[in-house]
Image 1 (cartoon, one colour):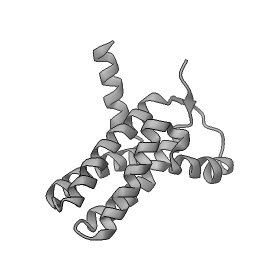
Image 2 (cartoon, helix red, strand yellow):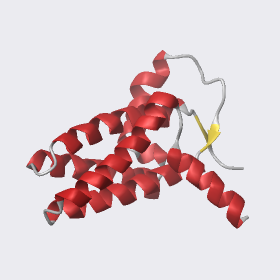
Image 3 (tube, one colour):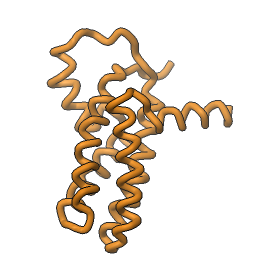
Image 4 (cartoon, helix red, strand yellow):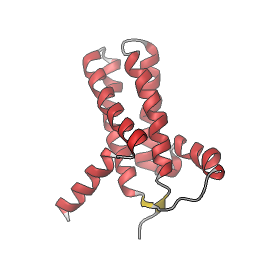
Length: 141
């Protein structure tokens, strides 16, 4: 059986990610965008490769938010949100290297795609990367 998590944690992380990516998108071409994308790429990498428990936004949720709210009414498997972190890492990596090489159009598109996915999760609880994981699991199982 896979590890179960409070689904509100990744949604909280998506809200922070939305803010970070929105600012980065507005600042493409300026050093602040590169700094924010660097940070966000590391955040995604930790969530994807180490685990959601290592992701800074998840740690913030666990330490500050979770103790102040009711217990979750349902839990979810960790694999889909962790895969979503991998997808985010992919887009953030493209944006990072595009910013380093002054390919601002590529960076803008990559950041925008990641921003839309983060916003959908934060605002509506729809995790695009999670859905990709579940579709892939159905196809390849």
